[in-house]
Length: 46
Image 1 (tube, helix red, strand yellow):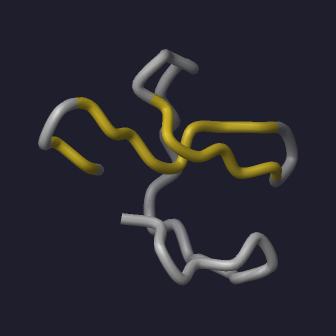
Image 2 (tube, one colour):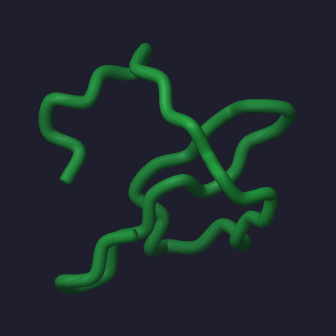
């Protein structure tokens, strides 16, 4: 899911809620503190 995405690429988050860190976290974003921005578990990606 993250192939071709560079660490310096930008994304826009429309919501203001976050999920707790978990083993399913595939990516974190550091913006005013680190938060989970991609979740991957089995064939589910969000």
